[in-house]
Amino acid sequence: MKRFTRVAGLFVLSTCTLVSCVTQSRLQESSTDQFRGLSSAETLSWTEKVERYASRPLPPVVKQGLKPIKVEQPCFPTKAIKYNAQGWVQVEFSLNENGQAFNVVSLDNSPPGLFESCALSSIRKWVFEIPETHHPENRYQFVFHFKLG
Image (cartoon, rainbow, N blue to C red; front, side):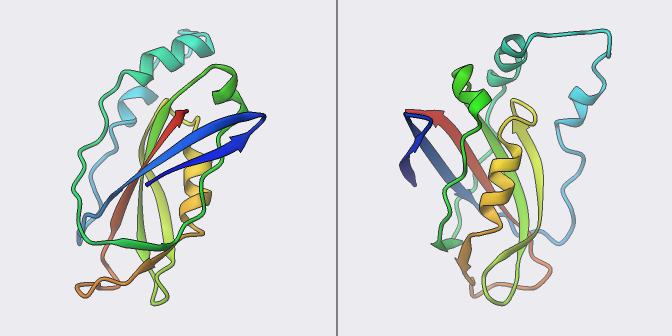
């Protein structure tokens, strides 16, 4: 799904790719944990951080039948516009009986922390069609792609 949104005088292309992964257990450690061990003495400029993490590969996409009914487009951070940054956020969530996402967590994102709050607040406002195979313990995943258009 692609949509142009006007932000700070620019048109922003928000691209969302739906991935659904039904699991009974939590996914293991997020790959962002590997970046938490960076030395505090290592100081990178914002541009260096964006360049370092923007080249990371996207998470694998498994397309299945989770269909959004109501969509709230995510915001696009001013800092990302200023630095012409692009990125993605992989979120995991459960669905309630009304098709609303809850227990939303960020599994991975790049560059770390830049688009995370926009993706999390957006997915909480979405409503999905309940799949026939839905169980209250099922977890679903969605990947937001943030690009300036």
